[in-house]
Image 1 (cartoon, helix red, strand yellow):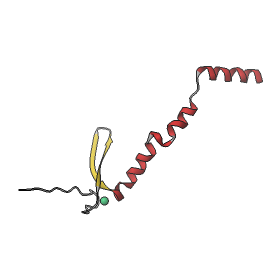
Image 2 (image 1 turned 60 degrees about the horizontal axis):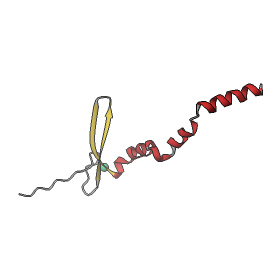
Image 3 (image 1 turned 90 degrees about the vertical axis):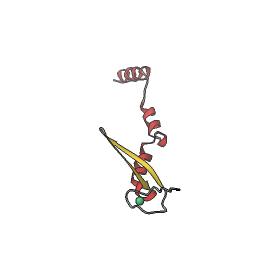
Image 4 (image 1 turned 180 degrees about the horizontal axis):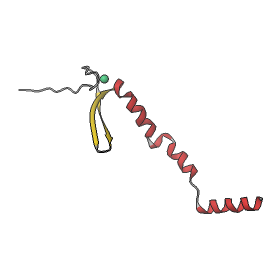
Length: 81
Ligand SMILES: [Zn+2]
């Protein structure tokens, strides 16, 4: 006997909507669920903001200084005063 299984969104349970599986971990507890595009939107927004290619890593890189640069800056400040 043939068997067909359909995964539906855990929030709305509507047929005909494509779903994606998500997992949220908090401390030792992990919950997995399937969500349609509409109900996954809040999670997707969070995921998008955490992606390293959104420019945040570049901003962080710009804040890094070498020890030489820091020393040079200290000397410059000392010379000014
Ligand atoms: Zn849904």
